[in-house]
Amino acid sequence: MSVSLGRGIFDAFFASIKSLFKRRYTLRYPEQKLDLPDGYTFDAKTQVGSPGVKGRHILYLDKCTGCSLCAIACEGIADCIDMVKVDGTWPKDKKAIMPQIDYGRCVFCGFCVDACPFDCLFMTPEYELASTDKRKLVYTPFQLGNLPEKKGLVEFIPDEKSGAHHA
Image (cartoon, rainbow, N blue to C red; front, side, top):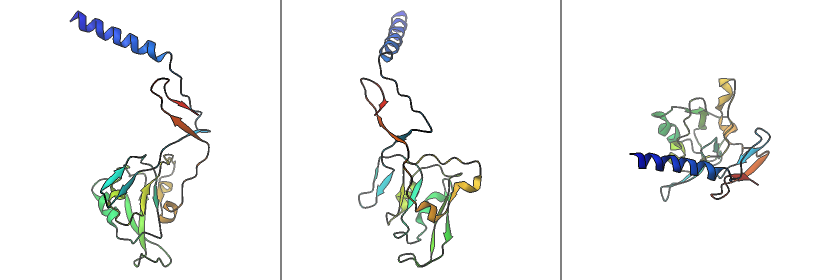
């Protein structure tokens, strides 16, 4: 018992000494933000999801057919996708309905991206979605169609020897 206790104390002491010599990582948020890798995507042909950050969705309006499979996939989990009627004529969407996402209820599982057979729904690495008004958390199809802005991004470099730091 005393040997394992001594070994545990030595391992903890060694880990803390080792961390003293690592380079520190401090981000001056909100002026600087992390430049995260690409968002989560799913290839329907190979049935493989790519690793990525699950953030705000992006909807390619010209590809969407209004099949509502994304809303069906979300139905049992968060029920945050509603199909809404949109104005205008769409080449592929004869019914003129598209998904609207309520980020107040979304759990960012990515099942809606997996269920989309036309590759029109993806997840971006945009993670700043907080709002004081619940109505601002509901994104219409046209808001989902806008690409996220990239302002003040800092590249994140994880390094095993010197610790995490930014360029």
